[in-house]
Image (cartoon, rainbow, N blue to C red; front, side, top):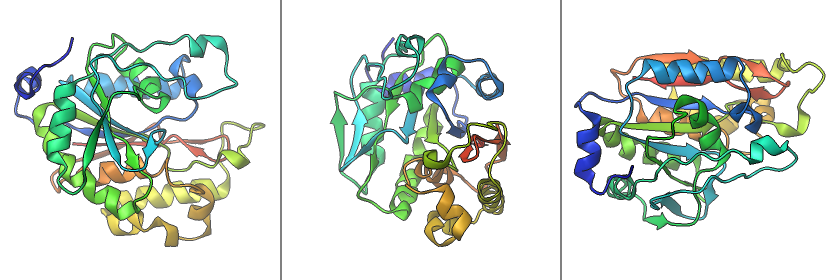
Length: 272
């Protein structure tokens, strides 16, 4: 199924109600083929929220110089990792694309020149989650890249422009990890987090609850625990997209709230 016009997407939503939006801690690509507590959390959220007309995903694994949106009818499944077992590479997530949603996204964003992309597809930050949330792969999916040349405040502001899509049945998903430091992972006790990782994760949650987005966009100045937790920005930035989408009337819910392998936070957030 594809949508050939903007009207198709709006009609498919079947309602003028505002869609929720998600930040999902995606963790290991193996979550795509495993059954664990995090997968259960993703499935439960999908069952709880309305079925979207389409999905716009901002993944930690698509950084570009400039801003791009996938606009192909049939996005490919990208296996952007190595060293994992063959069954993971065998996964195909054949969700249709939506040139209509791509165009809607381009029109919504006025502060940047958004270019259509016909090469990328769906990376594992996107399909490893959707493989469980919408296993039939019937909901159209579009990805929006993150401009690696821009500061966190820019990403947060751009997300506000995307907010209009929530009124059109579109589920916006930011996919990353609040705490993500692969260089110091603890393989011996995978069920626990380092003290500094737990401290940073709890600090982030507290700021999110308080609505203190200014400190979160300025995370570089939040202290040593945060610096250890975010050695590079790409997995944290999708959270800022969710925060930019949040309205004053939106409710807030955490799920999959756990820090694992010492330095990976699976904590996820739903608004709306």
